[in-house]
Length: 126
Image 1 (cartoon, helix red, strand yellow):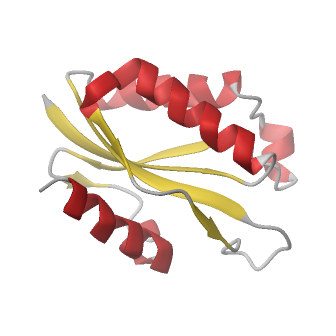
Image 2: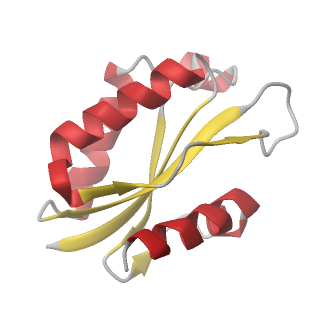
């Protein structure tokens, strides 16, 4: 089993989408998932509105590329599409930040909310 850290977020219909993504992922990973709190954050590009973001830790036997593809399909099934994303409308965003010992999206690790939620997630893992 591989430990995976993911970031999830939404900037539209935030409350409902946050609950939905938590349900979907909980259904997929069951007791093998730990979520942080969902945190309200400002967009990193300075645009109007806000996001709801969280981190989660899962364990899986799924290979990285298969897991990444599954998350992309989940985003699409939750209403995400390229045109809306270009307009800044993000119903669900799921990014793999760590798969096993390999880090991804290094710039995301520098965001204050990721640092804060990472500390919370580590506390929950003890």
